Image (tube, rainbow, N blue to C red):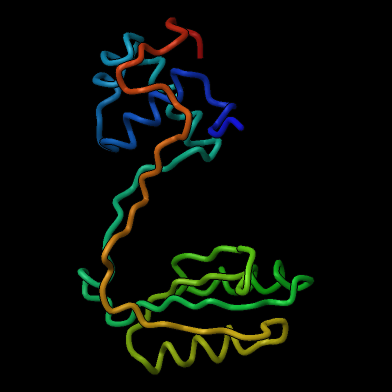
Length: 169
């Protein structure tokens, strides 16, 4: 089975790979590496960002920044109410990550709080509502690894020349 982003052509894949390595890499440097025009890179990056393939941002460790409470909650939500529950929770300002999954728990929520009282209020208000069968929350005390830079599986190696070359966008 082939994995990867089949919708991306080889040039787009290399652009994503280079920006994944260094999100601040200048378009001129990317163009030189790929032997294409800078305007082509600028247009393609704009299109890829607009289509939601990636966004460029700094990723910080909330605990290193002094956030007192980082909580991860695993919840089991009735399948018929998953969309309703997630649409409500995702709007809460403390929520930083929300994912729907499969398994014993079908919802994962990461949230930031000023203190234990605020965490308690959040859990009561958002995770004590109908549709949520059960939940378990852990307070994160140290982040050992946080990787948000995923390589596109099945992509060309960094030494492979991009194809096709040219000015088309």
